[in-house]
Amino acid sequence: MDAITINTIEQQAERAFSSQSVIFDELYSGNTIVSYKRERVRSHVLKYIAPGGSILELNSGTGDDALFFASQGHKVHATDLSAGMQQELVHKVKVCRMQGMISNELCSYTMLHQLQNKGPFNHIFSNFAGLNCTNELDKVLASFNDLLLPNGIVTLVILPRFCLWETLLVFKGKFKTAFRRFFSGNGSKAHIEGVHFKCWYYNPSYIKNHLKPEFDVLSVEGLCTIVPPSYIDGFAEKYSSLYNFLKRKEDRLKSKWPFNVIGDYYIISLKKKA
Image (cartoon, rainbow, N blue to C red; front, side, top):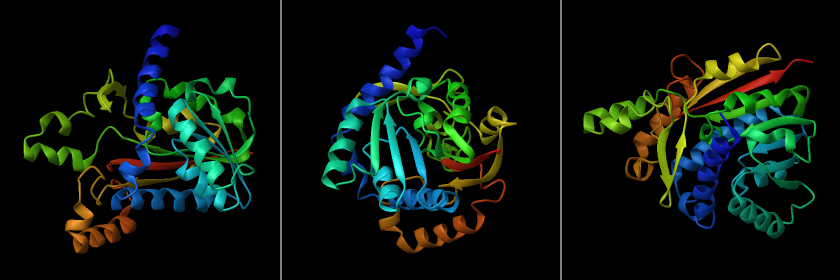
């Protein structure tokens, strides 16, 4: 793929997320299942990062995760392709007086070789499917080895090619949504604030195969496998008892096959060999 095509793909995603940046926090701050997802991901990362570690965050958005990890004593270098998201992050960092713990850089994850701050870091982290916005995930993964210290950790939150909850939408007649991940070889169309872009879906095997033999897999957890995806509006509020029951079930089964690979997302962590 030539540079013009790559730039077009990334520019489409950048325009979409920049257009949403000023309302992003307002849109999702009150969503119970989004809060559940964040808690799950953060707990997963904290299992593996040493006290006072350094984190390279990809697609950092408006900085909610960066601020959380900084509050836990970790230094975060927050990167994003979206200028709008970076502006919101910088504002929040100043308000929270976290400038000493959080740095930022406008950079695409497909161009990590151009980073000004190359670390090396203890942890590379990417949340909520930002890496699904490229058809060149192999290029991103190939950058990780040089950016990590020995025994460094990678944690990625990715949309797989099959989601149990989405497939069940076939019974509501939503055939396009139910099967969009199956037929996404050339990218699945998405849009935010009227701006269209594409996303691709990757199974855990893709990540594992592209990071071996330099990395060992630590764990794979399903996220919103039994708990409904956050786009099912108001589920947790309308059916609070059922929601809490499903959370308990997911917590018990999140690391077991097939529940660790058929969620709306999966969380995968790998360790760089010394």
